[in-house]
Image (tube, rainbow, N blue to C red; front, side, top):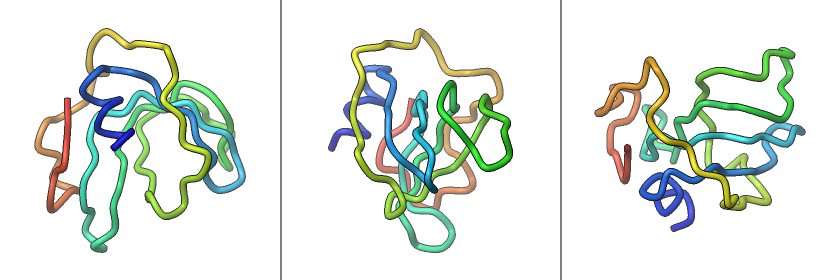
Length: 95
């Protein structure tokens, strides 16, 4: 799975989500409260509806398209990251 591969190797992801290109440092992937697969990550580039690019976000896998693992590494989890994210009922992979 590309998302878990990116998390394990601390590689940045690029994808389309809600009409915007997103560049994200992935931190956790699993099943959210609505029984949907969710990526939890820190967005570092691309666009958003709010205009605020940088920050923590959750992305529903069903709404993601054109997913690519980029040849860009990040060195450590972002401040504010918590292993065992309580927003995920099942965790497939995490930093």
